[in-house]
Amino acid sequence: MKLSVIIPCFSEAEHIEQVLDAVRAVDIEKEIIVVDDGSTDRTAGILDEYSRHHPIVIHHSAKNSGKGSAIRTGLTYVTGDIVIIQDADMEYDPSQYPKMIQPIIEGEANVVYGSRFKGSIKGMRMLNRIANYILTCIANLLYRAGITDEATGYKAFRADLIKSLPLECKRFEFCPEVTAKLRKRGIKIKEVPISYEARSAAQGKKIKWTDFFIAVWTLVKYRFKD
Image (cartoon, rainbow, N blue to C red; front, side, top):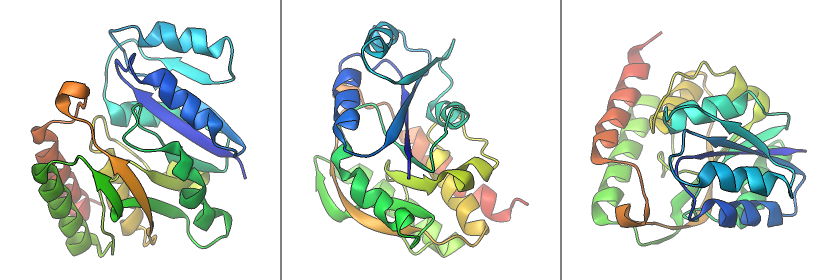
């Protein structure tokens, strides 16, 4: 089965080439789709130069619209059987792809979340742990999701399934929206343990504390929205 890796990125000149090399190194049939979400640094130029030497698909957005918008754009380019979202930094290690997609390949699941809390975590601040715990509890309470890590950045889907969801997300509310809409369809989410190494705001992490409240609202909103 062919894997489609969607990499949404915004001003990741320092990390993007390293991430692309790591993704390419995974010995799986795949396509790499990078959505440059209106970067204001050297990211666009780095991507264009990289594409001259390696087969990757690039979409340059004219302006920054957010991670959710970039993922939705990336989905329009997907030709593979399985989709995985890869952040444009090294918080998540692409060498974990085989364990992420194996349950889908074997027909055991249609959706797989990589759980940091079942695996190993390095460098995550306590406030972020608490925020993740609260979001997971809300997802389990409202949707009976039965998961341990709702906000994980590693989510893998059967391509036809994720493309069938009417996603509306623009920023970081992709995670709660996709969780809500999957569970409202009665789709079970399987988790596998992964390793995770957090980066700080000083290192370029872009999610803000306000995104936590947006995520909470997103989970609540879709529970009661037709």
